[in-house]
Image (tube, rainbow, N blue to C red; front, side, top):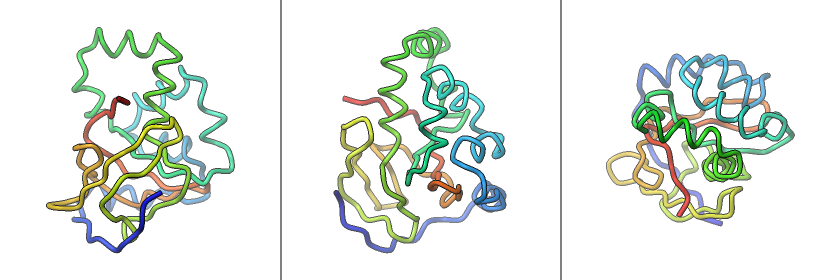
Length: 155
């Protein structure tokens, strides 16, 4: 696992509007309510991961926004959505089985639910495998969501 250390995150309008999401909803319902994770929710449904992400947790989800998924060519995204095993691997690569709040992030490597490692950097803002964290601490009853601007692919 990695060590935790306080880090400052830049506030954004997205972060401010998303912080209003009630923490009485699980990860899936929080993502639905946020409004900018439609593709992610569709992918979670297609991969059969809804019950998992509605489970007890705790989870930290580095969640690609709709804009992040839009960076993937449509034919490639469609193929990914149809390949349940690969889709599940990609989605679980975005999930860490602990709650990590923005104030506790430290640079280093962290193991994902998928089994791979994410590399966190904190110079010039927080990045996960090079993807920018665009908002922080979107609370859910079973964890936290940190929206990111790219889809992460396991190695």
